[in-house]
Amino acid sequence: MSSGVTFYRWDDMPKERVNDLLDRRLITGERVMLAHVYLRKGCVVPRHSHENEQLTYVLDGALKFWIGEDEKEGPVIRSGEVLHIPSNVPHKAEALVDTLDVDVFCPPRTDWLNKTDAYLRR
Image (tube, rainbow, N blue to C red; front, side, top):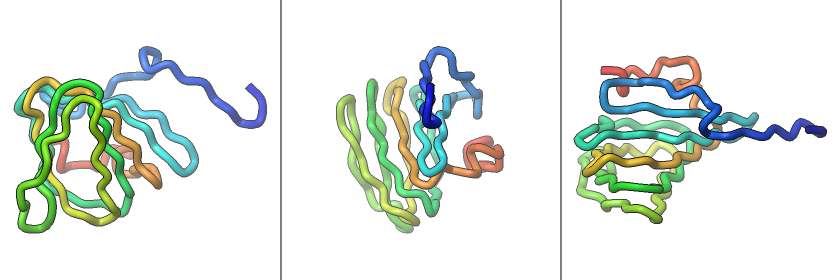
């Protein structure tokens, strides 16, 4: 394709095993990252924060979120719903059932790209 335009097919993207309950596929542009995140029931994403603005769109399943330093109870995001997480807001999530979500990050998550996301790899 011309002008730097690139075409991707999810099934052609490598699936990375991050831990026993979480896999992901990444597509990264210069200023944005798109990820398919596959969470098995019971997968907990520990509380963390990052400079990246985040949109989480649940395609199938359900994620329970806790928001803030005090992990105040947050929403359950189900199929067809989107959660916007501003930069530097602490958050934690748990897959209530097997879940596929699309995460969008701006800018891209360098810790995911260089595999220094130790909070997920425990």
